[in-house]
Length: 297
Image (tube, rainbow, N blue to C red):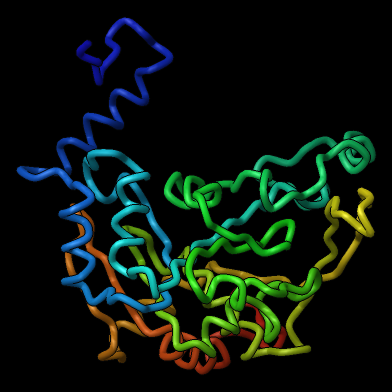
């Protein structure tokens, strides 16, 4: 049976139809396949045996035959059996309702939300607002996930357990985090149609730039404590990505270690995480106040 990609009589599908049409148009003369994406990634410099943290946008790749599954298969082929693939698995909604501001929820809901929110489970809890590729990767066979209710990462490969072994509730991006272990392993960051604004590694640069001086915020999440659900209040660094695009632009101007190439229809970038973090620390010190807040805020 032939399946239609447009639904002209279904108003509820109009947005999806327009989006699909735009994606097809952006692909131009060539759509992407597992094989073409694997070749593109190799041309960019993604090598077998490497450890790569991927931030991705499916729509930026153009029309992909097989969608997110094809992209993940290509990434796994590119790093090979000896490589380790890492992606963010953020679930920011598993947090205190007082911090939900996009949109906010009524304050008289807060007690019941805290009482009834499902416990964070790395095997079950979905990601939020980080893209369909990362969400599909989260439940891919063999993928592990760190045990942080809002800021987890997912990984697959021989270094996955080592990377994800610990992630403190009150310091998810600091020296005991998966990001710091990626740094120690000489990992790479791949922006696959994504921008520096979503480059999670820069939160480690924030921690190294400001340490205990960094402003902090109160949060809370439902977690398992000795096998029982418990709502846990905790304080964590108040991270801020609002100036990451400016930081990224400065890094691109000064660094010669960033590789650029077309992957599918998007302009992809591959960079050593060490270079990015080291540059980011110095840039943030110069461009933020002593508490780690962007200047002018």
